[in-house]
Image (cartoon, rainbow, N blue to C red; front, side):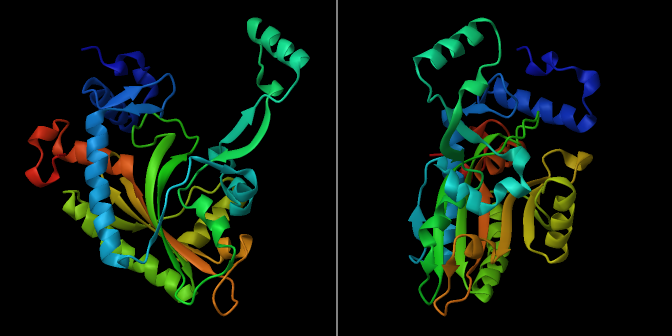
Length: 317
């Protein structure tokens, strides 16, 4: 079978990117992923989705162990209102990852001009305007607007699962433009938020252990944009607000791939969405996010591409 790697310019790729491209090609050749014309945008096979189900079963079991029936379960569309997006302040920190929905709202004349530009091979994007919606960048983002106001005394715990988009096309199959996150979010007092984050570091490690993955917790930071972003990243690391559970997909060629992220947001979302604790203070929040596709890829990398040869406890039904 002809590898898609043959279509890459090998001399332009580092050893790490060659390893990433080779893994991508193996997944495609095995029928687990379906390539598109864009890097980082894939279809998933039924077998891949079966593995996602195995992972989610383990994640949901950990959620029940941690929160019993107290976690409120929500599933949101992969788009949400621009007004809510702006309150997350994501555009300030990650403008390069953002995805906005545009649509045509013009009249017949404008439509004719659009078609003429298209027929001439010219750019026609400027005929489109904002649809008032944005692509979801983190699964928990659509949830905060419904919490505006006063929380119950014990705070609120959410179970949120959905597709996310981040514009970072790459040869690495673990860096997808569209992917799923299963999150458990705590919104309440500062102590509740910190306790949530800390408890899920160990619990997330247990989930990965159950799935047969060797993961290491590391203090990390988000990829904030620009000069001001470098300061934000440094503060995030210095204050230990983000811990990632990392699996080595490519041996010693890099420092590993984050598959679970445990984050403390402090009062950021409480302030921007006007969420208050029962005693009237700005609410703090924290979340743990399981990167479902990344965990699946780590399992294929660890256990092999043929799931029939996996340990019996991990095989899809």
